[in-house]
Length: 564
Ligand code: ADA
Image 1: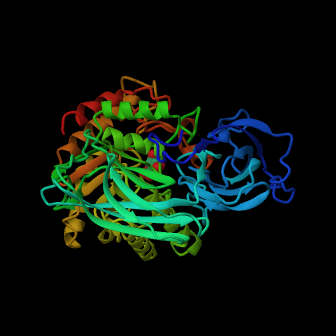
Image 2 (image 1 turned 60 degrees about the vertical axis):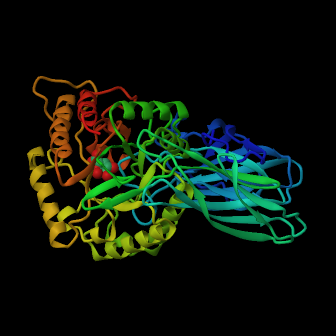
Image 3 (image 1 turned 90 degrees about the vertical axis):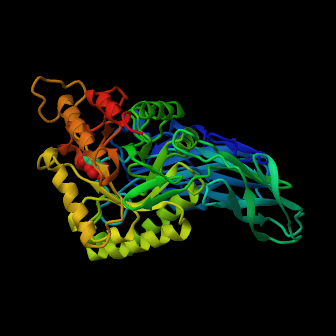
């Protein structure tokens, strides 16, 4: 399953999820031996989507892997859509290279035109290698580089004229009672003979606009605006009022879900629909010992239920664009979301590397274009714990921020900083987000008050005192089941005591607009980090990797449930 609602009612959509053939390629022989034409017979049967690291014997494998399946096409033109393939993907249909895609957490597609009816082969090379020079993410990260076709694959039959992409925008009246809709729609035709007809826009199945299409155009851009929607029901935390927008032409349609809401940063506060909110957040990786990144819907729902039960109103998708299924859940359950690209702990040499900068820009573009319509997403973040005290970082961050703002000016923009009083990039963003582990890696938890004061004074001195401050990461490890009278570091007691102290300080601190606890669940870490991580896991989860609660769960619930 790719999404929680039907995005096309007129297209025939076939899921290619299921059993595929798979073979690892550690020596990278597949290209020269043309596996895309003759797939090796000594391959194994795997489920797509999944991570190959969850196959027996491949727990640690990072490298290249090849997938093979067949499909039958019913129509002349098909859209082949991958929702995520880790690292670099190369796609072959009937032995012909369709193209590739870089980036493991956003989708990509190929339009297969004039396909002869019958059976076709589909072969995918997945290169999940990372380095310390120019991949995003780098090899050294604090999560595991699971490999594979980790999210769904779909095949859609395309009519002669089809809706290639669309953007639904809206403005809200000051009293938040009326929305004005705007549309930017791109149509493609496979032949000039294709009949055009009429384009219609429906809001909750009611036609709100019509537009006559010109005959004979091979491509068309339709811009419509000024369409009023009165007495709107706002989307809000725990009140997920969603509207269905259908863009329809004679042979095709595209369905989008939107929510009317306004997010602002003003006078050190974050406002949702004109109301000051305190972000009660948690950092969540998409990780589980049995599924890796390829988490099934039921587990996503369980995570959402536990996070809501804990009193959270926000989730940070640390540290990459999440599954669209999980984001659909956030939209329909009224959960705020922070989305980012996996630029984790980069430094000067990377900021000056055009490959890194270009890849980062492309990932930001794909993330915003993919998830623009989601009411749950209130924050876009451009990197995590990079050397933002470097002038070269300021230059790169400026490019990244300009790219995101050019695609979407309606959301808050930030990055997660661990340079705090030495950071030189805060002027570029809407909110200041700080990752700090006082009382875990260094210093004492009692140093937090002074730390917040120092950063606040820095912002004051730089004329940035209007920016809200959020603690975007804080926490301590607690090994599940390790409970002692003394409660030293690594015990559940220490973690519980740590979160008790910090949440009590943060939730009552006038200068803070929110907190994201590190982290929701224990996760597997990369081999580059394992010597600093008991069990080769990051153990700062409030629940363990099997979602079993630690002592800290009830402390978080006490604090997060005590305020709105
Ligand atoms: C950093 C990083 C997280 C995690 C955390 C930790 O803040 O952003 O991904 O590694 O530290 O557990 O130390």
